[in-house]
Image 1 (tube, rainbow, N blue to C red):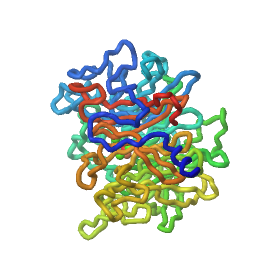
Image 2 (image 1 turned 45 degrees about the vertical axis):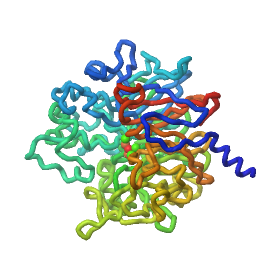
Image 3 (image 1 turned 180 degrees about the horizontal axis):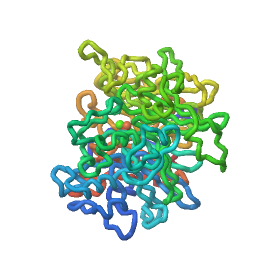
Image 4 (image 1 turned 180 degrees about the vertical axis):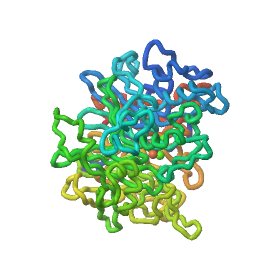
Length: 572
Ligand code: FEO
Ligand code: CA
Ligand code: CA
Ligand code: CA
């Protein structure tokens, strides 16, 4: 009975039912409120979003961007700063004057460029709840034209030099910022995911370089930057896309600081960057590459983290590893080095996917966020889904765009995996820097109302907590795993009964999972962090359908919300 009570104590809320409506549901005794919405001003001389006109080009780098994603809260003295990503834009709603959102001018392109990237904003809790502190000296937008530096082994390489930057050091902008991370020294890590979608060309004579294929860089783009901004025309600047796809370090405490692209952490479609300090003080960063059949990575620094010491080279000097999951539950981190890959070190950092294929890494079902347990030495990765796992076409196993064939393996065990799973690993010797690990599946998502086979999911999935496509994941300070979903919300067929996307809490010790929140229809739940006093859980709602959160007749706006207990108890 005592054990039962302890288990119940891990879930101090009454789980919510699946929902299909246009708002948010949280358990009894909790409430939520928007804090920052797409187009909301960060400065007092800027108006709120005008639904008919959008945001003007002059103001587009002074407002909260679109499609909120990964975030982290930083305490700087008594100031609470949230650094938060804006993954992508919907051109139709940002350019209401343009036909189907197709940019017609360089200013149109600039609006799209400014509405993405990162916001750093000060927030404060007053009588009306949490609000942005307008005009805070910390408030800052980082976007597709913000000056930044390349550092690490690929900085200065021939592969990243351009006419505008013959040294291969000074680049502009961060792209498709998806998940995030933080360092113990107080910096924010923003992760460039589907960067391929911004670079293209109208020059039909231009032959795309061979390495573009593995990253999905093609001539035609949705955003049409290349028509109005020559930097994005790959016929003119073929190295420009090789300057994106990195983890970017930002100092949120200094609005004039220059973001740094850490090429030692590899160039992939980065989901997030989960940082932990190894037993000997080296810095370990776990990273997923979110594409069907791509891999899970780990960086280990050469240097040791010393609080208050010099941290400027820790993410530049070290070794990048890729994961091999053996079917017997063992695992190995294989170093990507000139010896193991036959590639030069700058090539490994720029063509990381190709390097990882050379050492026989395990193809995964789209690695999304990695989360590190703060109270046990283990890490978790959400493998969101992979509809092509095990699929055979023309007598051959499917692969993704020049990637490896996606055979079934024990960590990715289901063909045409629409539901996803969460894998976890325990490093050997209780040391995240160790080269070996043991792994198991924390859960396999599924639908036990529709299926009786492997697609019913693992034993900790039931009709009351079922979901599909785990994506965002983070542990709170008590060791509870918060799982966010980005999946199919039709509530039909294989997804009947699962409702809208959601956020759930999981207990690593027991495997128990309970649903905490349901999101508005059409949206995904992504990004989370906690206030300094742990009495507020900030959560991101991305790409809602109409009308959220402003109500009937208003535009849908992606938003960061604040969730609190009505008794103001700690919730994280
Ligand atoms: Fe932007 Fe893989 O999610
Ligand atoms: Ca994601
Ligand atoms: Ca996703
Ligand atoms: Ca998304």
